[in-house]
Length: 267
Image (tube, rainbow, N blue to C red; front, side):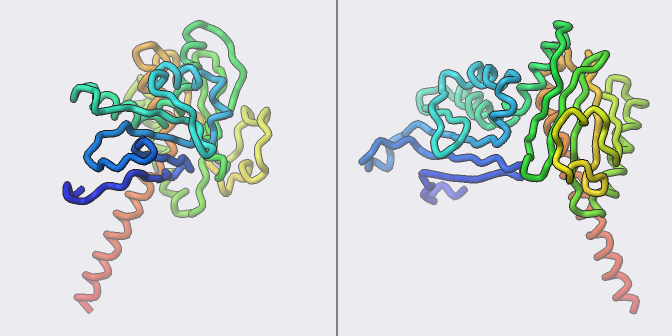
């Protein structure tokens, strides 16, 4: 950013999962001092909030953001107000990092909840995290003999994406032969039997549109030492996969263009 450019007092944006954000200065009505330092308000709308808040997400929100939490506006689900100017440089950095991770912290909360249940040897009913309900993509968490299972429904609108995705699925399945602590990953074009208890939309059961990835979260991944990492990285699996698919396609297109340019020179 150019330090001479005047920043706006309000910004709205959204990510590829349909989560929207609002960032604005909390200026009192009628305030005209352009050099004054005001608190910052950050709001988020997480579409799957109602579905996950009973699985530890509400408690996690209060635990991490309780001292800044305020009532959200315009149908949003989360809101915090912080005055960074009253903090030291170290506190500012920690606070900004915490607020920047609002979405992953909330999406990861059910995984922490499941980890506590598994470690306490308590049973729980299978449940759904509809984090991309507009596309039919969800994460289903269910108990397993040695931990828990996360099943992803991943949509592929482009047949080419699916072909490349299958290569990544194969690599992930084979990873356990090299890294013994890696989770067990299986993928299929057929809807797993574990999802029969859920009322899935007919299109979600269509194996030509969706792939189904099962990830076994063993006790080691849900231990007190590892559960935080698990809660951050596992919910991001779908984004991780599609990011690498897009990078692979960009690389292939670049190679094809270079090859075409070389052939044109020969001709």
